[in-house]
Amino acid sequence: QVQLVESGGGLVQAGGSLRLSCAASGSFTVIHVMGWYRQVLGKQRELVASITSGGSTNLADSVKGRFTISRGNTKNTVNLQMNSLEPKDTGVYYCNAVADAGYLYGKDYWGKGTLVTVSS
Picture (cartoon, rainbow, N blue to C red):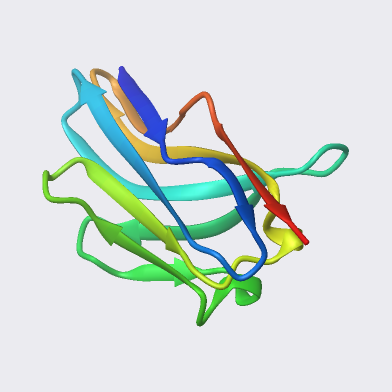
């Protein structure tokens, strides 16, 4: 099993910055990918950014040039630096990990989510 704990959400004015962090713990063998998804009321959860165990990153077109995803100082943490925030970035941000744990391979694990609100 993998437990994901997020931190860093909050309220910020448009043009400001926030940094989200996610730490993974539990009895897993390997984490293949960690990332962040965003969900707004009435819409599906969408990928914001992800990073593989090898360091390859993938960012949604809407955040390219503004957001950066990186591995944290410890192996199983991931950070999302969000700059030049816009009201459309508002939503609940969920940390995601794709991991092998026990007899489960490539399973998705989710954090509880952290709210990001960008005011205009």
